[in-house]
Length: 383
Image (cartoon, rainbow, N blue to C red; front, side, top):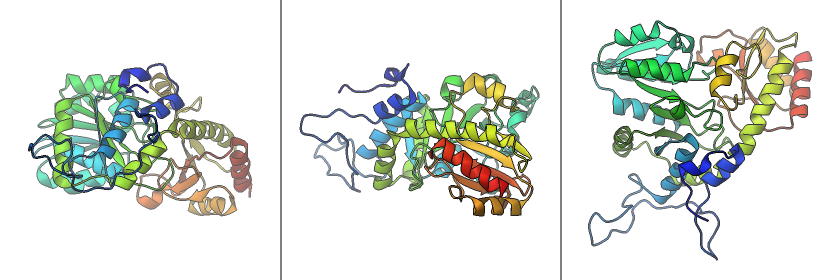
């Protein structure tokens, strides 16, 4: 098999892209896939500085295989794996911000990003501004950027987690670049199989690979992808010095799992759309949000930049008790946080401090048969 490059993925479907991303050159009699590489130090050469690997915190063959696959899927020139999605975003922010700069974070995005910005960056002299996803698409957003001190770094999460609002990334990237701001996009909910922010103008992509890409709810992993070599080098240096690294077994698990991401994510998206359509007419549901649902406020924008709309559906039930009763009555839905695994889960987001109602629920669709999942959820809601 010849070596796979980013350009080789054009025109391929999701599963072909996923399988090809983890393919490797192999000789007759050699394994089709590499196993985990357990090593901390590597043997040094007498020619000092000629080694590709010296110590696993700096680089290792397992990382390179996974990073090559992620870069290909994201359409990036460079990808760096990290120990978690949070370590990916925090290492990136530490690498591109200094005292006197400004960071804009989504007020309706993942709540721990806001906590990190306010608890860790603000005390360092970095101005933190919280702006909703919809406000980032507003005409006045350019004025906010121009009035902010220092270098401005914008973090967008689209679709936002958990409300699933969508911002037009082409427009946002244009606004950011005209103002001299760096645009970082959290691509966790969409995955590179749903959208490719770098092609839409983003400077950096960050994501939690814990979710749909690894897809089995058994590891923590994050990554950063970019076409900017200088930014990538700074983040790689931060990873080395801070030690926010991915272990060898998790590296192998993620790489192995990536080959089936197209199949898994496709089923999750199909389940999510079918579920959103069913829930939109159910008497126990007050509202439904899904970017792929016709009539959703995000549908038009999402349709213009997303290939698939993701596996998350957000619904509003009447109360926290209604949520607990629903989960207890279901045979297939488990109460759990995180998303992207093979099992369908539900998470009451007010529990974690998101600014939503007590009965707001994020349902993360798994890969169950669609008819079985819909029948189970409808029965649980009826009960």
